[in-house]
Amino acid sequence: MSRFKSLSLQTKITGIYIIANIIMLIVCIVLILGINSMAVEIDEIYQNNINLNELSECLDSVQSSMTEYLTYKTSDTLENYYRQDQQYNNLINNLSSEATDASFSRMERNIKNMSVDYLRNVSASIEAKRGRNVEKYRTKYEAATKLYEYIKRYISDLNNEQFATNSVNYQVVSLAFKRFEVIGLIVITVVVLLNLVLIVQMVRTLIEPIKKLANVANSVSEGNLDVELLDSDTLDETGVLTNVFNKMVINIREYIDRLKESMEKERHMQEKELMMEAHLKDAQLKYLQAQINPHFLFNTLNAGAQLAMMEGSERTYEYVQTVADFFRYNVKKQDNDVTVGEEVALIDNYIEILNVRFSGDIHYFKQIDERLLKTPMPSMILQPIVENAVNHGIREMGDKGQITLKVYRENNKVMISVKDNGKGMTKEDIDRVLNGTWKYEEHKADNNGIGMDNIIARLKLHSDSENVIEIFSDGPGKGTEVLINLPYIQDEVENV
Image (cartoon, rainbow, N blue to C red; front, side):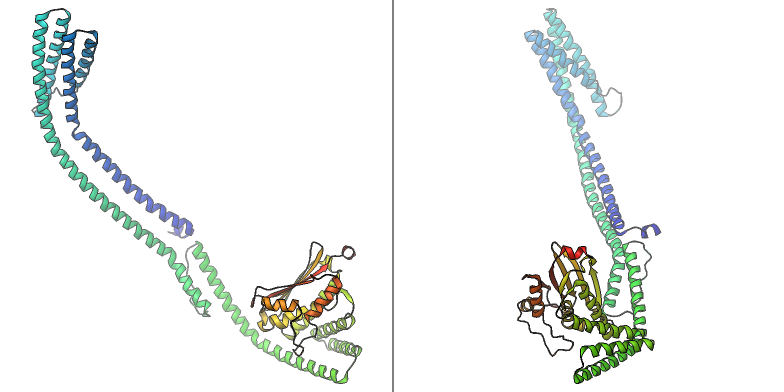
C-alpha cells in the first residue's frame, strides 16, 4: 500500500486501465476457447456420417471401375480400378473390427468383413477377365454385385441410425451452446460492471484529495485563512501539491502577522512624513514669498544637510543632499545637452525623493547598458516622463507601483524605455499625446510644467528626426511604456 501511495498519478491511472483491460482480455480468451471447443464438438457429431457417405461413394466407384473394365478391358479402366480399390481398402481399414455388443460396432464390423469379401470377388473377376475365363469372371462378378448391394444397404442403414443418434446429440450440444452464449453474455456484463466499479472507485480515490484541495483553495481565495490544513500521506503530484499549498497558507499567515506588527511602525513613519511635508510646504511658501535666488536655495539645502549630519541624522542628510542635487541639475542643465548617464542619475535622485515622500511605495528597476551612458541627449527629458508615469499611472496603486528604466542599443539607435504597470492609456489618449493635443494640468500637484509636447519638440530638434518617441499600452489597467529613440554615436561610446 505504501508503494502504491508513492506512485505518480499517471502510473496509477495507467495501472487501473491495464488491470481492467487484462481482466476483460482473460474473460474474452476463456469465452473464445469455450466457443471453439463446442464448435469442434459440433463438427465431430456428424463426422461418422460423413465417413460413411465417403465409404459409400468409394464403393460405387469400385463397382463402376470393375464394370467398365469388364466391359471395355482397357489399360485406363484397369488403372482406374486399382486406384479405387486402394482407396476403398484404406477406408475400410478405419472401420471397427472389435467384437462388441454395440449395434454400431457390429454393423461396422459386418461392413468391413463383407467389403473384404467384396474386394476379393472383384479382384477375382478382374483376373478372370484378363485370363479370358468367361465363366469364372461372370460368377465372380455376380457374387461381387450381390455383396455390393448388401454393403450399400448396410451402409445406408448404419448411416441412418447414426444420423438419428447424432441429431439428438446435436440438439443437446446446440442447447448447451446457447446456454454457454447466455452465460458468456452474463459474465461479460458482470465483468464490465465490475471494471466500471473498480475504475470509478479508484478514480474517486485519486480525485477526492484534489476536490478537497480545490474547496480549501476557494476559501483561501475569498480571504478565509483560518482553514484547516489538509493531510496528505501520498507522494504523488496531489500529495506534493497539497504540501505546497499548506506551506503557502502558513507563509501567508506568518506574513499577515508580520504585517500587523509593522503597521504600528508604519503609522509612526507616516506621521513623520506628514510633518516633513508640512515643513517642506512651509519652506516652499516662504521661498515664494521671499523670491530667493537659486544660490540661496542651494546654500540653504547644504546648510540643512550639514546640520543633519552634525546631529547624526544620516538619512535626513542624504535626503536633503539628494534634493539639493536634484534642483541644482534642474537649474544648471535646463538649456544644455547632457548625457544619458546624467539623466539616469537624475531619475535615481527623483525616485529616491519620491520614495521618501511615499514610504517606498514606488518600486524602481533599471536595466542599463553602461556603454551607452555617454550618449548625448537634451536635458530634463526623462524626469517629466517618469513624473507623468508616477502621477498619471501608479500614484493610486500604493506599494504595487513599478517603474522600469531601460537603456539598450537597437541597430543604430539608442533606446530609452520608461515603463510602468499603472492605469495604462487608450489608443485615443496616446494619439492625443503624440500629436500635441493633450493638455497637462498645470495646477496639478507635483507638476513641473514640462509637457510631452515640449519633450517631443526638443527631441526632434536634437535628433533631426520625426520618429523620436513612441508610446505603447495594451489599454486601461495594463501599464504604459514610453520609448525614446536617440541616434547611436560611435565616438561617444568609444570614450566610455
